Length: 374
Image (cartoon, rainbow, N blue to C red; front, top):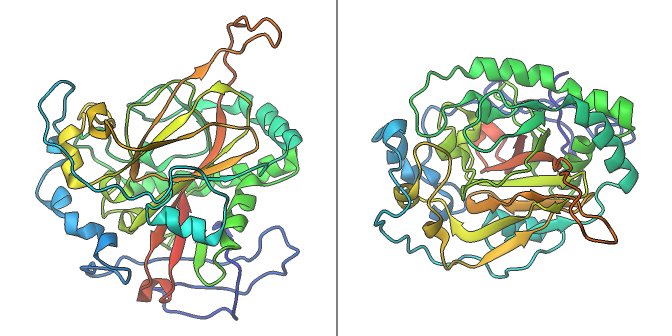
């Protein structure tokens, strides 16, 4: 079976229609995966005006960004231009990281907490083994408008329109690549002794035994890949990752109402921090968009409260990717005694995956759902 799911079953599997969620029998808990099931979310005939958690979760109120403006006209922001202020109120109730708990995860989904850190999620020996195995496999992204990136795995954004450009996009190419890429996790398990993506999914699923938790799938072979290993050593512009805008309604992930990411750092590095700002994407943000990249004018977040996530090998960090954020460059290694630069930068390798929230609906078996993709 191609789909990799990690939902902890709390009741016997149910049989639903082919347009809904299809579950098959769970394996014993001592198996490598907690259960083996297929989660297929069909596209609804019409999109709801709101979801069950209130208007604050309704991304479709911004539907004009899809229907009334082309990608080529979305965002006209340029540095130094006079731009209208974005007056969104602060959302965070704290500006420090917290540990991984169910309530912390819910707060992060709702934009109330900036950072979650699960310390020592992977051991030092595991990190070293993955670095040895991944380093010779790293390849450039298929398509990317930002800083130079390398990766092992498949990223969905490689197969979508980028930078405000009108492009012909065929999701079939992505889904074919995604199906093939799942074997990467099996290969790494055989070489390194563990499946870190499985571990990450299980850790989230354990917090939500009453939810659907698993890799995104639209059924009928339209699978999504989750768990990309990537290297970002240079800085990125201020940006956000918000799939309802970035991907649109042609993709299942364009129907989510909340989005977070986990990054599991595998290599000790100097620098390489990520700064997250207490401001989430909204249509008003598009005035600050640089149509030639995926970035936004830095003045958009000037004066906003921010939080810093430092990469620590073995730690898993999560944050809400609708919040604007920026990655800073990795620094050169220094001699441990003299502090003199050694002129080398180790690759900042992370295991990363988005996690999207889908509200209860007939297509999800009337259960809240968390879906993973990269």
